[in-house]
Image 1 (cartoon, rainbow, N blue to C red):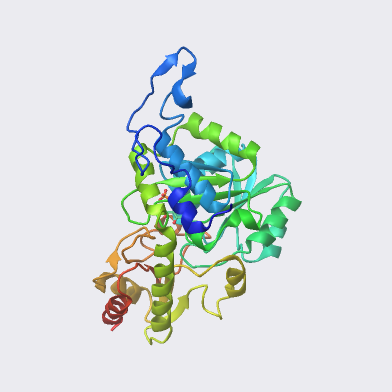
Image 2 (cartoon, rainbow, N blue to C red):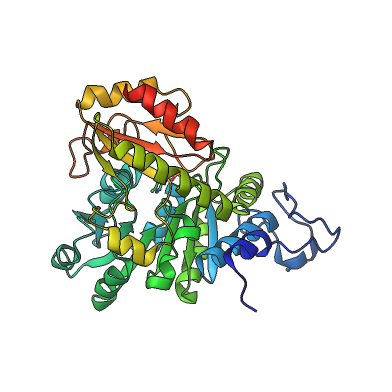
Length: 379
Ligand SMILES: Cc1ncc(COP(=O)(O)O)c(C=O)c1O
């Protein structure tokens, strides 16, 4: 029988422990496993970089939540991205990346992978014709974030999967902002889903992690091989914390969405706000696509300060409940200035973000308190 999302979040990969009946998968804090005879590891485990039961529990759960066949957990989102890039690309290849991507993803392509011979072009991913036009004979990957960080742009996953596959390329979707509760890219034709599990999947701002989820078995085997060969795996305690967060993803996401919608309503009517970026707004250029591929519109909101860049910085400095911090997706609300914080590494590049932009990660506190905090900060 097929189970619903919330049931999978609580049970996939999490059967009670065989030996003790522990209801929660234990933290197997060990680097190695006794072998019954030379060449006979017990239950398949031999060395904890290659495999650990706590990480396996998380990986199985992540695969189920994304509708994939294989999940792989890493030490961070960027570790997952690096492993993916070095598995599916080789020197001389060319990739298409979003012109509005997480600054660290941009830095990984522009400052690290490029030195190893990987070419890249930044493209506006909501423009399918522009993506098609940017293809070169060496293009092997389209890399998409949707919604994007920090401008909340939307890319049509199904349409881009078609373009990628017409050219024999892979479509990679960074699903960090939506989380698998709101959007499942593999079901729309994507080949690989990327997560910074640091964000909504972990959900409590207490662990850094990353993940890849795949349907294709051959690609899954290649990525699992590189996960072990390159070694940037999630440790057992990090995997355990991430899995604890994932169990409540559905209920948390619904509250994140409720609160974000109320805040968008408030900001949209405020004279100190020039523009609100949120895919749930009917006038957002990607609204229809978002409504087609997402269950709801998420907990991330960004807006432009009507009085310019200095006012944007001031607003970030003035909130009390919204904590001034990088990252997102935790139960607590965060505020930041992308141009000076998360996206500083994109300054002077095609991915530079507007200086009057403020980004909110709307948490699950009492929404009236959040609105009151923004009201006093904007005053
Ligand atoms: C959309 C997105 N992808 C990837 C990453 C990188 O993940 P990590 O910080 O876990 O390495 C981030 C981090 O903020 C992100 O926002």
